[in-house]
Amino acid sequence: MLYNLEITKKDNSLYVCASGVRTSESLLQLAEEIIEICRQQSTDEIFADIRQLKGRISIFDSYQIIFREFPRLKKIRDIKRLAILDDEGNSERLRFIENVARRAGYNLSGFTNYDDAIIWFTAENVPATTE
Image (cartoon, rainbow, N blue to C red; front, side):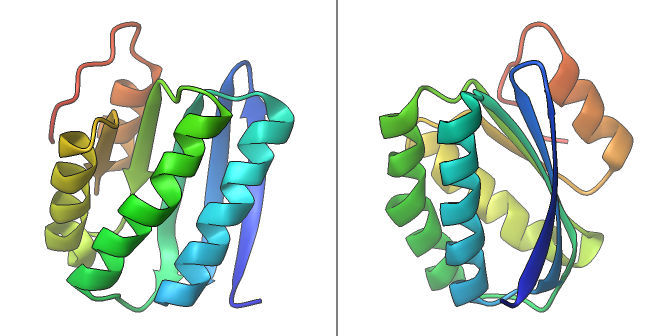
């Protein structure tokens, strides 16, 4: 396996910290594993800290992950919100993923600042906003 996950559940929220190698294959496997954990744990909010994943994937692969894996999340249950925390070097890709996901109807926000991500993720009303 090219990645490791540390997972904590608090109320209906799943906090995931991923480390390892970022490839399209590892991200697909990671998404599948998180989806399965969401199903098992009956969670409807995901905070994914992927700052410790090394490497980059293409725009095409990013797009594929959204349209291949995200619909499976909706089949399990409605996900209220998904926060993705990534490093500054991936901010452009993060914006792309955020825009594509929102257009597809997902409440996803991407962040490169931990405090901003936590504020958005733990807010009572969760508008889809950017940093």
